[in-house]
Amino acid sequence: MIKSYWKQTWALLWQNKLFGGLYLIGTALPVTMTMIVVMYFHLLTAPVYPELNRDRLYEVRAVKTYNADGVLIGGGYCSEAMVRQWFYPLRSAGKVTAIYTYNRNLNDWLQLADGKSELKVHTKYTDPNFFQVFDFDFVAGAPFSWSDLESARPCGVLSASMARRLFGTEQAVGKRFTMNYIDYTVTGVVRDASSLTPTSFAQIWLPYTHVPGYGNYQEIGSGGFTTVFRVQDEKQARQLQADVRDLVRRYNVLHADEKRLEVDCPMPVWKRNLVPGNMEVDLPAMIRFWGGLLLAFLIVPAVNLGGMISGRMDTRLPELGISRAFGAGRGYLLRRVVRENLLMTLAGGLLGLVLSWMLLGWGHDWIIGLFDTYGLMQVENEEMLVTPAMLFSPVLFLAAFLFCLLLNLASALIPAWRLIKEKTFAAQLSEENDKCFTYQVMI
Image (tube, rainbow, N blue to C red; front, side, top):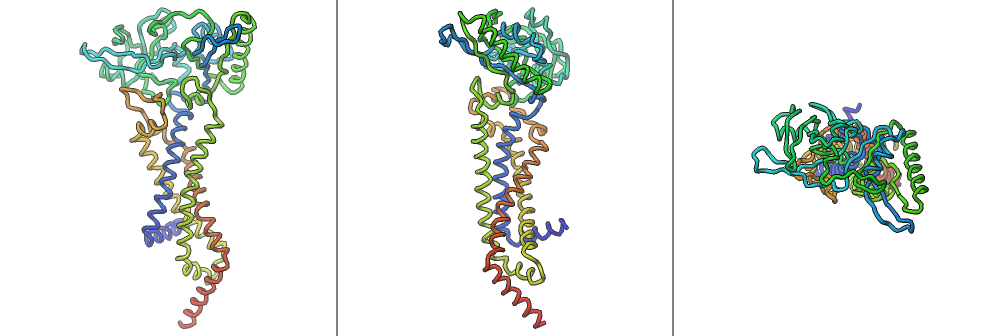
């Protein structure tokens, strides 16, 4: 049955090449634009390597310090003392890692083997827990240890592409490289991450005790660290948020005569990926803006396609009249028109889905650059990694199908229903019936 419907639809398209081409393009383009937007936010918010548990990752970033008179005297990220005294021991925190964030674009330069060339690299200064909070695949070796962190041993973890670039192989454990004129030893090599996962992405990971100008900040307050927690479930996340608020409350009570702290409540990492720095996340406003944009992508082509279908229905009146003469009811004719347009819309939707994959696969640097106005996902000497696993998702495929279905219903059902319900249509069908009856009598 479906095969016969498809043959009939293909025959109609072949007979009306201009209409068919415009219909497919008019369906494919809005699907392409919509899927590009949806896929971009999917990359930022969905579980992708190495942030495979984004729904369980929470972070504390912004800290503000006020004096006793309520005047702001400092602001930034978490201090190391806050991380060590508050967050590491917190029972509800699950797994905790601290990432030096204050100056994330540190000018770290690799000195290459020729002794003359240098390569600017994207580094991340963190602790050994980082590789437990995030799901990195080690192709060789292991993370640096806590003793390496505390003793400031010059060692680190490389991405697989960086290891190949420096040593020609991923099996680089124990090899040495020079960065900022300091010799480091490779403890492990991990599979490449993408700069589309900004919380975890780097080319080299080092102990944060090697931050240039590092000092052990003993005072609770603002500093240079983002703290990321990996909780087990929403219950633990709520307990974590309550515990952090309680820590801040007790600190402010004890230091009421000196100063007061404001600390971000632990927030899901996927929300933080939507805005740069310490900007507040206005999720409802973002949903309204992007939801309105996607709705425009749907409505505008639906109106255009509806006009095309309405105009084409006039040329199909003889065909529909003959079907009516042989006993076809209005419901059958309506289902027939919608079914034909559904198949054409699905073909156009599939074409649009393939186009969106191709554009994001081959032109992702340019497309994502349009969204990433702050350049947080651009790496100077690294091509942005976008894998098929990051682009293809059953949820996205289902969303594309539902989008095509909605587009079909909006563009085909309304004009077909209006035409079939009109009295002029009934009169024209009657005229076609008379012609068919006369033809049968003459035979």
